[in-house]
Amino acid sequence: MNPQVALYFRKEFREARYAALKDAEGYQRVLFVLERLGAYMVEKGCHEEHEHEKADGLGDYKNCITALVKKYHPLEKDRKRQPSTYRDCHTAFGSLYEMVMHGRNDALHQGAFGRILTLHLVQLALFLEDTLMTIMTGEIKNYMTRNPMCASEWQPVSFVRQMMLANSFTYIPVYLKRGDAEREEAAWYIITDCDVAMYLQPFNSDCRARRLTKSIKDAIELGEMNIEKAVTVPPDRPVRAVLKLTEGKKPVLVKRDDCNELQGIATTFDLM
Image (cartoon, rainbow, N blue to C red; front, side, top):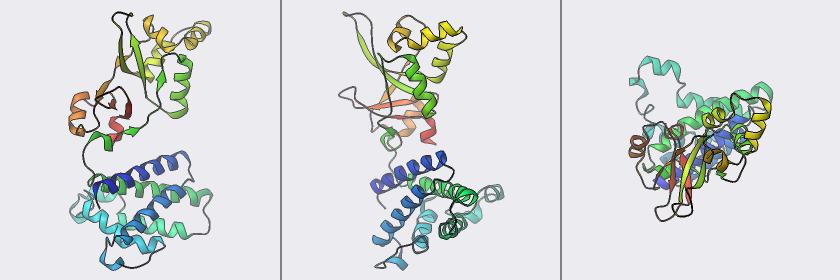
């Protein structure tokens, strides 16, 4: 499997896993990605037993997907040599795949059955994401969240707060122009949930209402909200270099060198 294909499937598994975590019975999307990965590998002859063989079910994909995991997953290459604490805490990939396979074929996929199947598929997705990450190249563009939601300086603080709470965001990028006409500086900044909380507390309801309706630009220029300039890197910067640059404390924004177009955002959560 080449790095571009690994990147594609890792992205698909991650997005499907996020969707499943929002819905306790949202197993279908992870299943679809798993079946597409299996079909791709069988079609490409990724396992001798499946070469030139038509496959249409999870059982038909088991050998080739398990072989991929055993070849590339850092903890599955030689499971017998792993400490007993690892074996006690993590279900083996083969056993997990069997549980998913039996759950997939069960007629009842709702209630407790659906939730258990979703849990197993989330764990299986994590196994496969870790496996695919070892095949991918190490540039930050492969790990960032593309096309992130951004705030605009004219929007009220209430809208930023709403975006954060509705999407469980800790950080939101904003492009600000600061200074006067002669010495104006435009750059990307990061608004954190802590910035918003500090801006809104502790004030009475009238003061809170006034602050919520202020634009981001006004709140910052009046010195009421303190935010920091974002660390920006080009898309081909190695992940290790990015972590050293930010000390793992703040997200980084990925943008093109020749303009301020934002391509993505990466947090330490994305790089684990």
